[in-house]
Amino acid sequence: MEPLNYKMRNSAVKGSTVERKGAGKEHKKYESLFSEVWNGQKPLAKLFKTPRSGYLYDTGTNKILECDELVFKLLQNLYASDVESAVQAFLDKHGNNAFLQAAKEIIEAVEEENIFKLKKATQFGLSDHFHDIDDLLNTTVQSITLEVTQACNLRCLYCIYHDHFKEKRNYGRQEMSLETAKKAIRFLKEHSSKNERAVCGFYGGEPLLRPRFIKQCVDYAKEIFNDRELSFTITTNAVLVTPAIAKSLCKNGFSVTVSLDGPAIYHDRYRKDAEGNGSFERMLRSRS
Image (cartoon, rainbow, N blue to C red; front, side, top):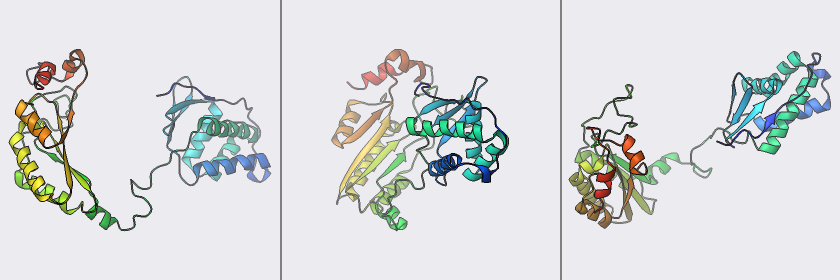
């Protein structure tokens, strides 16, 4: 996160209450600018306070801006209601002078720091030219990931299935059946007809606890994907990799993601087996 590098501060003195009809052109200008910034939708940002000051965290720029008290209150109003109501509520309580100074600080921050640009997504990866969602979902699926097994040969301390995390299930023993895997592979085949290539991934637990099962899936996938390109991925801790497994992964063009936490002093601190032993050396030995 970037360091605090901008302060929205004002030196306004609270003025008398000003009715909307008595506000000048400058006041209307700022209200109009706020409407442009908010544009019917709240920008993705978060207001928070500490004993020292109030702050704005802007998610689009990843910046934290310190706010003076009145700036913070005006921003609170803008996030709590529509622009017109927010401005009027601030005017009623703090007056026109305070509003003009706080508004000026906010607009200057918008222009100088590029804040308030990120808005909530209204769609996820779908361009405007996609009108037939059913056709999209039925013909352009790009990949599947098969959870081969719940079992794992390690007990990494930060794993969500570790005993530390009571709200999650512990390590399981369930395994995917070959029948289910074949159904998933056929689904990928049947729903990716408009793609030049498709991807089948293997995950766990530790998927290499079931090398024969993975080979069966690969053989079946290559058999039915005879009309276009198919690639494979696997995520593994690499402890169980043997020369034969490595040769098979290479032969079938696997993209391999290995869970590695850096040098042994860091890796072994958390990536342990059930007996509490580190896995770094065994992971390295698996390469030879």
